[in-house]
Length: 330
Image (cartoon, rainbow, N blue to C red; front, top):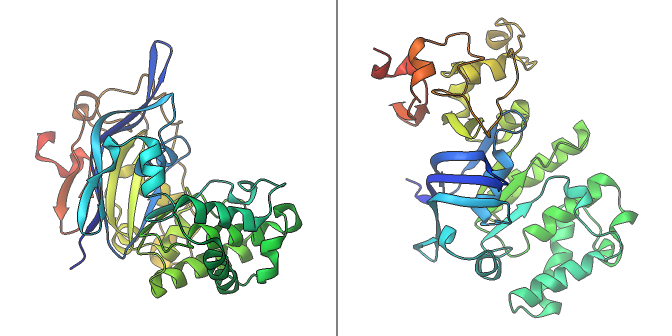
């Protein structure tokens, strides 16, 4: 049985503004298992990217961790990376044990810096001979269907899809245990999306990366690649479950709303019809009382306005935060 690679325990990460706090990630707990791909989905502004930064300890003000901890398994022991400084985590873990494919990865590369310079910087950061890592980079470029000669080119000379693959190659050069892909396919056409997902799956199959967090608002993509799905809304986890079980029978009304708003080819899901979720996500400076989804929920009860539902396991590997599945509703 797989063990936990990362343990997230009661994490609260807020953006501290003048006399205000944006509760972007609020009391979130879950585990990332070794050798799994977990998809994080939800509407824009639900806290997905903030959660990615918390996992990397990429904490830059006004973002602040106000509670909880993140444990990362390194050399067989769990390290509380949330207690370390950003610089300590960057020096010890970034690029080596955990890596990031950022949002708008195609535009994440400085247009005036050759791709080889990124490899050289990575080598310098971790005390690896430059020529050794450049040799590995040439092989990794071939793995992602890029000619190694592109290492000596500037990013603006590559197409969007090629830049995306270059970012993947550089981000995985040191075979990180955890790869965080934050909205990596949002700017790609359908053909390049397919190529990107194929590369990620092949890297996991070869053991180049051990576990992947795939952050997106595109449920259709998650269904193609992930083992488990984590559904976020307004800084909270609403549901977490194996992908096939969520698709077959979503438990939280929010999850059901997300699935029903997407075109899908499966007859058993297609017959549900396409619907939208009424309203808009709440202001996280002053989130609603009780369940944060209750103002938009078609199944809301009086208890939903008064109490916050706990994330509880209702069957093996399935957790949901909803009073429809809680004894507290009585």
